[in-house]
Image (cartoon, rainbow over all chains, first blue to last red; front, side, top):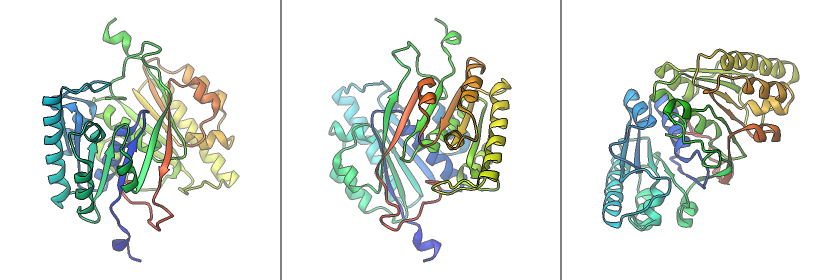
Length: 179
Length: 179
């Protein structure tokens, strides 16, 4: 079996209540970029004007990381009008990226919020994933990944919180580490 | 409390049998690099001549990622002479980096193998961590993190395997995603 035929796009899900879901997706972005692959990340929760570590890094690398959320909060509190509209707009962008055949890896960061709040329909997402270019990898992140997504995915990892310093110890999230 | 006093170096452990331990450490590397922080990753298992995705990316970014292992295998099979010697050499480099005060983030990738095989002494590692520059973040990755390390760490995440496509489906590890 040649290399060509062995490359197969995977659907990868990083879920769970622990740290490292988005962070591991960034690691994939970095590895793929290192290999000259074409990568894009669409972000659901982070505010479109944010200047996070990954946004700054992406600018330096010339990679597209597109924050399309209504703002970052540790526990998202949807204000249905804005959040739902932005959530749907992010999906429209992501859908177009997935189907464009211009990428090797597309990352849908925190999309599970949009799925769980009903802003984006899971069946439509699965349909787009089914019809994606065969070698395209798609990475989806966020807490509480719906069972239908887990069933569909090739590779699912649960990031489980074992020990966390905040807020128990009064330590705020650290720049460069968490954002 | 000013920003200055709120920055505190964390000891972060990514462990578990799932994917994303090294990958999430790379995400931290990328975020920190995006913020202009000084980062280095020392790798225990990967072979020093490897040209993995993260090595290629690091070269493009001008970040130090230093593979110091005897070669990559999914299940490490130590040949005590070489592996133990290389494991100790990697720790000597890591120790010097941690104590140099030249970095904001030091990543010890797959160090748990060296700890679990007894090539590197846990108490010595904890001692160096205790004596590190106070704002230095240290990230340690690998399966089966020793309990003493978990007890010492600030933030511990278990990457738990929920679903994995290989080897069940005959799909090899994919470049850009896993390496």
